[in-house]
Image (tube, rainbow, N blue to C red; front, side):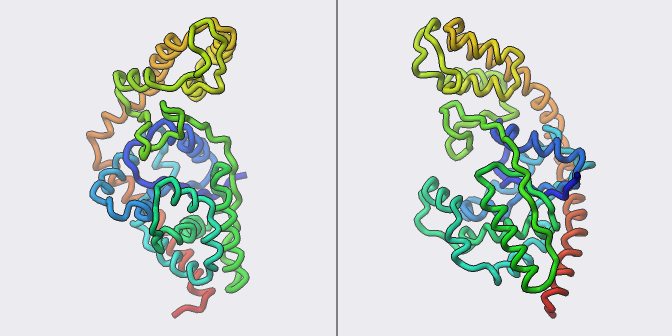
Amino acid sequence: MSYRILSGFRPTGRIHLGNLFGALKNWIELQENNECFFEVADYHALTTNYNKTDELRGDIIEMVIDWIVCGLDPEKSVIFVQSDVKEHIELFILLSMITPLPWLERNPTLKEQLKELNIRTIHFGHLGYPVLQAADILIYKSTAVPVGEDQLPHIEFTRELARKFNNLYGEVFPEPISLLTNFARVPGPDGKRMQKSLNNTIFVSEEPEKIIKKVNQAFTDPKKIRKDDKGHPENCVIFAYHEALNSKDREQREKDCKDGKIGCVQCKKDCSSLMIEYLSPYREKRKELKKNEGYVRNVLKEGAKKACEETKKTISDVREHMKLW
């Protein structure tokens, strides 16, 4: 069964291993047999970084370069910038008119963001971003959204909003299902979730010497002090990298670690070599594509045209059902 899919990232510049294994790998598989729309969610970036827009345009280009380098194909998927498609905002406004405030206040992700980013004053756009996210999905009449378990509440919110709209004005939107995927959790060298705000990323385009430095600094099993100590790979960042990179000797390495036959120093050296080899093709492709930013801009321009063809049809349908002027 094929689906119509919408997904995207906030534009934060170059992507890291967490982005690659957490979402992009999945997108690349989905584009083969589904109708896919992938957005650069620049409006969403303003919810927490409204005062940091100087690098926004550059970050968009850098991120899309990596998308293409990693295998997202403009011939198979529609790749566009959210703010190039104005119907997103029109539907956002219309949906906000029927969204009860308690629906937004119960958002668990928002509570986590406020705590994590130490935000004391919440703005309307931040509180209402689930409505914008729902508009992003529904404007394409998407039938499925790839998510991890932590994003399930957002999809259920979108389904509720679609249901309410359909009950009020007539059937317009399908209720999208969640395509629950087992995203690989790739930690930063410090063991925490890999994210730029924590400065703990390993970029897909990372140079070899920086890979070696970051891997050498990575946390390992705190109970394995000497080589012959029995290890606990499940507690080791380096082993998580071996798993993500599909190391051929992963099972043997796990056994040797548990049996005290391999030390952390050697494991880090092996990991660095594996990671450098794995990322080398991406790094070289990026250098070539970086020389041709005009191509990337054209991909986004053509993607916006294709996206607008769909969104204009949907918003016309919405206005007709709502009996708007």
